[in-house]
Length: 482
Figure (cartoon, rainbow, N blue to C red):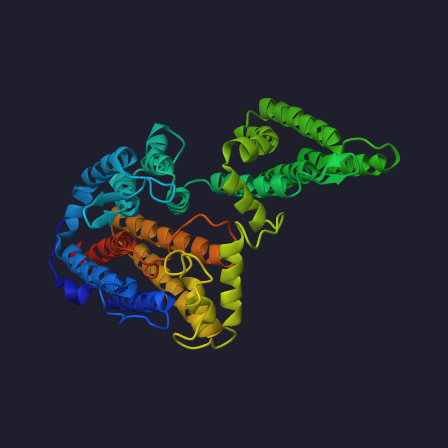
């Protein structure tokens, strides 16, 4: 492909750079506010959190400058090598890292501590973009698709072995990138159902409706409805599918009515309806030799097996503190002085900020250190308390603008590699922002995930800076490709 070299500083997307700088500076100020007390030192003092964050910001700017100076073609050429290096570093971390707060995710080298998981994100994004971009690979269920998913599931597993659940779950955001690149929406729908069924199975698993476990009943009803809707959408106007749709719903209503007169476990009736649907669909699949009739059968089978394994996973696989966190998030347990303390204090801090906030350095919840980890994972509550609804709205607006801008630039790329990497960048940032803010507001469980460019820490800031500036370098060379 021929190239013509332009001045990258003229082609650089300065809007993205400006948003990045604003977020970094506001994050630095928020860290100072979160760590400030009435006898606090200057925000430039290197013995304090804000002073150290200033060092990370300066080094991040140097890192961003260096990444922009590297030839854009090198990122694609060395992508696999970069990925392998960080995979080896993740393995080394499992072996060599000391235990810090229950996890082994930090490599300690004298006064410097690095968290390789933060850098593995952009390395994995490069590898995924390279693989999809090679030979114009089309997403379909084959050996190459398994290799592709393995590229981001491998670091996920290695980070889980370091006991860093939050950082590991970020790699699931790559599925959103695959969907943009042509992956069937069935996988995303299956993932949505898995989360929904897990939540319903846990939240209502111990409640009974007569002789019927309420959680199992709700999930089985949804399984019947989803299977019917998928088929109806696929084969609109087919009379035999209408028979199945209305027949299964009529049987469901009849079973519910009968249970009022003859008490029994309705889940048995629902399993019978699912079995009848499966037999009927298998008959249609053989008669018309059509694979789409098999997919709902597989969905029904896996949903049923998954439902009855939820209890085992929750009680035997998840650790006690993880179980309590989920129960607190679902409103099953009220533990404001225990596991729910962080979230409860965070919501109090954000709510106390009102519309305009209490003012810079005037947050009482922040000053009295009621919120643990308030300069790292819970930094957003400082913004809410001191700057109120308006301040949080501005911060959220900046994140939305940055992510939207990256997606806009990604669509304009002339190579698959650059486009895919751009979407990887956007989805990683989206996942972090959505989960972190959901965590501090009590919407999602507390899993320990930083807010990009805000949370204190060099590894986090360097990792996000590298992720963003590599894409900005690729975008700056877009017009070079004729």
